[in-house]
Image (cartoon, rainbow, N blue to C red; front, side):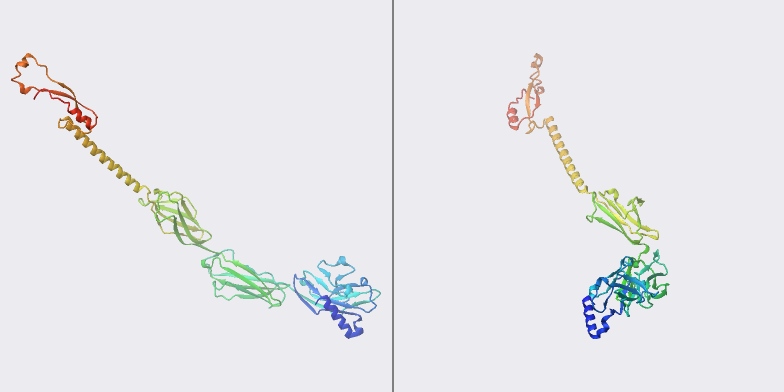
Length: 436
């Protein structure tokens, strides 16, 4: 209720009750709050006329007793002694309007109690409200805490998870619930309450058999408090440790047929936690000799692969819980120059055959010329250079008639590189002197 509402209610009540309203205090019956919240204690007061100077009014708030002389009374606010007032306590009402509302910030469970307002006008004119405000401060349950064993390994018989929340004021007013555990177990969580000396604590637990399939499962624990629509939650991600499983070797290449100079990556893929180290093996295709490659990475990169990289590859993933070996994968690197080389060899062979044929033909031509079987050639004609006859002596002349069949003439011939037309013209100049 706002200040104007309280003032209007006070006026109406005074008109009904008459003189009873000359000295009065009105407050709420009760206030409930969470620890740490801010609360307002609504209050108004009335005193008889004539109206006094409001600056002479002393406003006091007392806890547990309306009378300051009572040993149980604890003064919360005094407008004349503000230096002793907590900074969390503030009078927000306007005394000129006879509004005495009080605000308490960051309230604690220790602030639970009954609060009374008292005003003093001086000269013995004081008044304490008979009815106080019952302030109930509930402790806010702590954020749930989930306790998981430090190391959860696949194959452990049973693992227990515990969720707890404390600072619960009343037994049976809070509940704990789990989310995300249906895939872990059919176990129904058990919940227990315990008195912790100043409040109640609440715990809930369940057990399950860990599997690698439970790795990275998100689990949530939620606390709900019944007096108010209040809840809080905590979540964890399960870390299940297990050895490598289903290790495979993958080849990442730009094309199916791997050629020399291609960029090729071999990737070892496994499933494990914690992450595995990798060992790579290469077996030679001809000798079956296996070598260990110097790398522990999950991949092997060939920037420019060559024929010497051909072989059978596999990899092993290992962590401290075990290992897993992949199947072998054959890498067959094709030479990119094979076809070009065959073509080049063919061209060279064809050229050699042509040269051999040409040499044979030229040699035969040369033999024909030398043997006198052909004196003309389109390319290398034989021309006349000199003709000689034996000198005739008297003896020879006398024997001319008898040895005429033995007479002969010979010519000195020279081969010259000329055109066919020149060769024809010169061949007409050849003269045969003498007879055979």
